[in-house]
Image 1 (tube, one colour):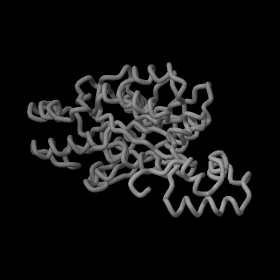
Image 2 (image 1 turned 135 degrees about the vertical axis):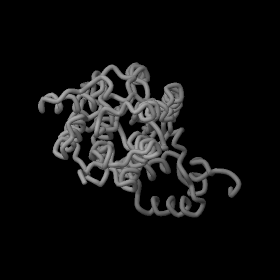
Image 3 (image 1 turned 30 degrees about the horizontal axis):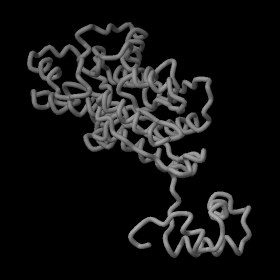
Length: 324
């Protein structure tokens, strides 16, 4: 028995009861006499018996597993999300199966299919491609998108528009009038940038087309940033970056090009990860644990009515944006 996994039938034979009794003792202990439960537990402990979860699923008992497909392990923000998701799922009696899409839409799709094959009871996803969310809608598995707003699907995010507003208001308070944005441009709309533009307009300031430095947030090579810096086309004295990774990349390229931060360029990141903390970058904070908690509750509720939740962000002010 040390060389193979004990079956429930073998355990029942050792105890001298039926397999059904062993199953009840594990799943519905209140329905089994205390003396019988103690005997079954003795052999469970002795042989380190582990119930077959696949067999339970086949009998219509839930897998008690939630899936979490993460945008990227290289971004510390998503590692924080995993930490909270595992903790909160465990408190609900669930295990967490985590997969990394590596910012790749096809990988993400394959992970979705793999999780469906493993009978997960729900999926949390920080998406790469909205088409994969459309596919999930065709399944019976409840899911929720985290960290981005995807109208028409369940999602929980920080108000990205509000985040852009907070960052821009802070830079204006520091005396900046020419404020730009650094981020991706592959979505139909850009809520963070919308927040930047909104506050600028409210303060009678213009956002010029050249103030948007468009970067590939998947590859993050920084080529686009280098072109702007090397050609001395930097029109702004301050920038809001779409996340801390982008802010870090911009800071690195700017310093290499001879600029000083914040003396020449003020900078605000997004997500308040360990990256911004180590590099002293001002960053928009997100209620990550609350976001994950709300997402898990949506998945476990399994309601057909779509839930679209936006939480409020804050800001952690550091050296990179302070007017010296």
